[in-house]
Amino acid sequence: QVQLVESGGGLVQAGGSLRLSCAASGRTFSSYAMGWFRQASGKEREFVATINWSGGRTNYADSVKGRFTISRDNAKNTVSLQMNSLKPEDTAVYYCAAGGGPHGSSLDTVYDYWGQGTQVTVSS
Image (cartoon, rainbow, N blue to C red; front, side):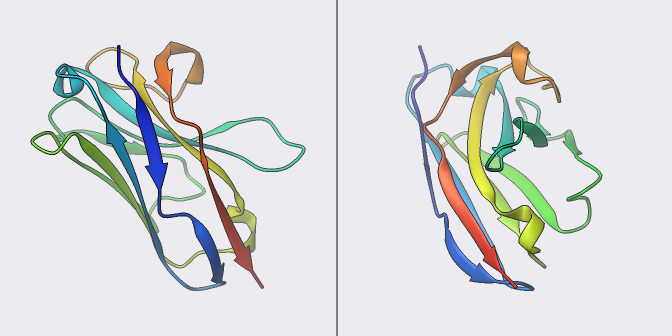
């Protein structure tokens, strides 16, 4: 069992930066790939980024590539999402997820555990 708690969301102007963090409980954190997903109001949840169990492999949605960076610290049971050059279209509730095997996936259906989400709002 893994419990996930996101933090770091907030209101930022376009072009600004935010850093989201996800703290995980459980001794098996390092065996899971981690992902970040987001859901804008009235839209379906979409993939943002994923990182494999070791942190050596990452993957990003085209919409955030070059602007967002996912990282993890297995000693601290945390995964982070550094978001730079934010755009109004990045506004959404951001969720971290654990599972999907050791390598991660862009498919939300393969993740076993989810956090409660943190709101990110980017003003124009």
